[in-house]
Image 1 (cartoon, rainbow, N blue to C red):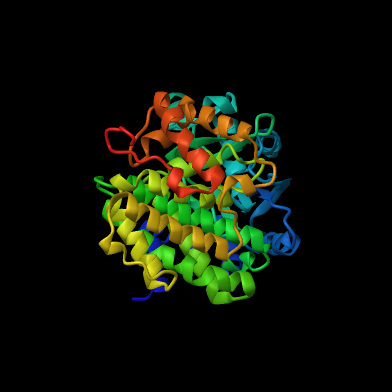
Image 2 (image 1 turned 120 degrees about the vertical axis):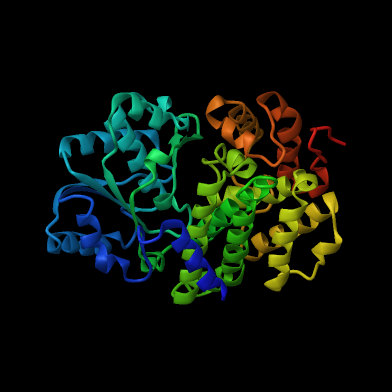
Length: 429
């Protein structure tokens, strides 16, 4: 079974028949939406080329006997709070049976949050954290409207997951709603919509999916989902490593586009069985200077060294994938501890450089020491506690400055040697 077949098998194991995906999926979208409702509100992205796809969706809905009661503009990048509130208000006036969201992760996440506010009431701040939506819905006896989430970008897998990332533009800080109640029940993804993605977005999305698989695998050591996390990573990572460069050089590469879509969907599977941790946590404070996937790509090598003592098994899995795809000749099986972490991190950084991504924060335009301070402050907040707890070596808010601070300094300088060594009992050396 090759990587493509293995990826498809895993995705079917994940979603079964409750997922409409693959090239040509938009041609089947009418009946897919009809199962959700006969009167729908369409929230649409406005990316370049989106008008042609939206026309196809409108025609498909009409052919399926679905009435489009309103059409709403989607969210800007990073799903600003203001866009969530606007979408909530427009959906409330529409009185639709179901909602169709068509766009990238920002639009899909913004609709998730808007549906929560519309059904459960309250403020956005009431739901940042884990399982807070379900608690309110349970107490009130309410439920969320049916949501058909149509993805257009190979990256976040927002159409498949329980996460809604929302950004406070006034502070430049991203926050997170995590709840099974917000998983879209009717996801769809036509891979053809990714063909016109800008190169930068393609790379960012690929590294977001890669980071999902890496971070979940790192945090799964000693947990029941470790074997599945490793199986997903071993199927998904090669699809990115072997095809990203080719897609960046030839955007119309159909097989390469399918590889990235399958891999990033597997990233979505990963974050439904486990959670991301350190690199994602830091990325939430860099939204004004780096796209999310790029921020995760930059930070993961440094956190790889930081956690190396606790994740030798995952690092050998990851290193072997890099070796099998011909991107390194390092014998990772012969290494251990910090030496193993540095070798894997160097391979990760080399791949990032190959596709044109920055590998140190000092090279990022607009990055300042204030971003480091913001990241450390955000890591201490209750809303993001789950990211500290998901780390291979869990930290508390009181440990953040002493442990994450040096990692951020190392990433600023671009020097893996500056990353501290940390053990499971959190004594650095």
